[in-house]
Length: 233
Image (cartoon, rainbow, N blue to C red; front, side, top):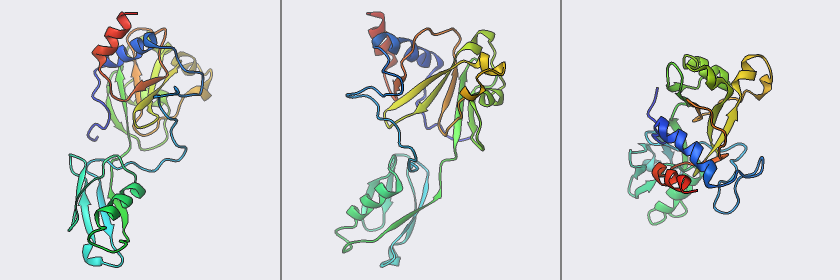
């Protein structure tokens, strides 16, 4: 449906990360992120984060000749008329406005600028692991993990029903991992524990049962180094 915006993890890499991180350290208290150096809990109503290929309309009310429609390039930069380049990927609109004002400081006196998103990354979710049709799907409405699995053709292993993992981007550098017992949900028990899928979420169905896992997983990591660390304990 769209280009990947999440790490290109292999299934083995995901499984290794979940298993080995549990060996490398203990899980943080329920509902809390790890302290020093760990993830920060996400904002309740976060701004949209700009991505590559987003199309932006820049408007300068006092100098309309500088109005421009720009696209965030594959390297994350935008080219500004008479003001060079600014790195836009990963910024919110308010943050980008601040950077654009800085870029035009030597060109305009106290520049006033507004930014409107003309085209943007469409919401998606990913289902991987032991499902009939793993892949990336458009998130067109509110759906739960159980419904996401149905969209992906259902689980291919009966043992997987007792354990599904939901990866959610909790901050810039971390994923929050939530374990879901799908067996009870499919039987009509604890239906309120069927999480709602959010944009960018990944549902992973492991081949084997995982006894322990870390609640937080780094957004990017070296699988080999974590495996080596875990095997050494």
